[in-house]
Amino acid sequence: MPSLFPALTDHPGEQEALRFGDRRMTYAQLATAAGAVGERVRGRGRIAVWATPAPETAVGVIGVLLAGAAAVPLNPNSGEKELRHLLTDSAPALVLAAPGDDLPAALDGYERVDVDVRAAGPVPDDRNTDAGEPALVVYTSGTTGPPKGAVIPRRAIAATLDALADAWQWTGADVLVHGLPLFHVHGLVLGVLGPLRRGGSVRHLGKFSTEGVARELGAGATMLFGVPTMYHRIAESLPADPELAKALAGARLLVSGSAALPVHDHERIAAATGRRVIERYGMTETLMNTSVRADGEPRAGTVGVPLPGVELRLVREDGSPVAAYDGETIGEIQVRGPNLFTGYLNRPDATAAAFTGDGWFRTGDMAVREADGYVRIVGRKATDLIKSGGYKIGAGEVENALLEHPGVREAAVTGEPDADLGERVVAWIVPADPDAPPSAEELAGHVADRLAPHKRPRAVRYLDALPRNDMGKIMKRALAHD
Figure 1 (cartoon, helix red, strand yellow):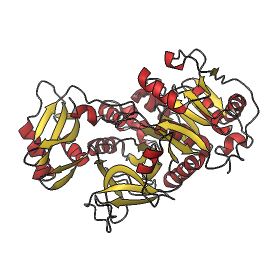
Figure 2: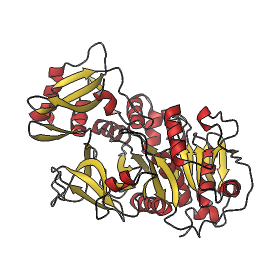
Figure 3: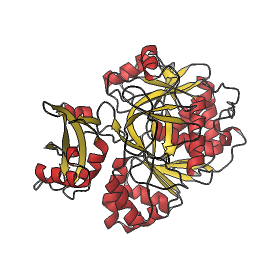
Figure 4: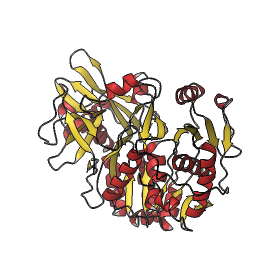
């Protein structure tokens, strides 16, 4: 297949490729540093990468990919039990890390290679590597058991990034800024490999801050990628930060993903900046499936339309496809296309269960679809579809309604068993003022007025903070066991 990164393999020049704080690398420097990594890992199979937010991570992953090997990004925040599981399951030949990184005991016994960003190896050439060869093994969050390693082939990376280039009009002239972790699809594939495939550049903040966003967007960056927690902090900061508002107003594209961005935050950002955040939808196993297009209508609360090359359908509980899209009928999203993973490492049983007989991947995400193709996700099948009194209620729309109440800072909605209703709607609330939280009756009425009486919360529980993972997603299983 053609090179994953033509700007690195075909006469790399002096254009800036990476920036982490004051550490910068041109395409020429990145190509030779990645080439040096490639010389160490070629033919070694799977290679673990200690994925800190640093240029060594980017150089390491690029070097592995251009050498035709498969990178296994490791979350530096993993606990020892989880890390040992990942290592036992993936059996890496060695681990790449930045010089001076203090690696945990779980990595004792594994060969370590320090990534030297100043090294000069031969410019790599990956054009003879088969499109179906593994490029990454990325581990799922493990909410229903030990994390599973999704094997992502080279063709999936190319297909997803090219489809996003079409949807977002993404070119080599774009400069992306983000502060996402680099052990996940969002931060690594979209946030680092995406700009490099286009021949553009990425500025990583190291750690997200609204000050960093304002600085980089104000200094020539054109795109911002973030998760809802980040955009919520931006929305909270905008009223008192005119420089942030000005910087966001000048961006070409603001993109949110990894979880639903509440409509309330959409509206606050649009009111302060005149710019709409667009959302996209993907998973570790599928990379990207849908997005609001740069030249499309930015509807808050939707994840847009299927990307080029992606087939998408909604399926009822009995397995039959939803025949006509009306914006109301809920079904499970199933997808098919070149963006999909090839399977779970060492888990043929889980792989077989994830696909239908005719090749559709069962996402477990529930959604409705408008007649014009726009998709609105209502939640996960396992945690966000609440069956109450004969109705199917999506947790997401109830959460959005709760967040419109001025007394609510954060909200999550789950279902719990109820003898009369089957399940009842439970709201978990972080109040704006802990000393004067809105009452359960007030919140129930607020939701009933905006949606329908059967969607109102029947119980309200107050928290100081919602449990979230590294990507800012609310961990609802933790709520259910509180």
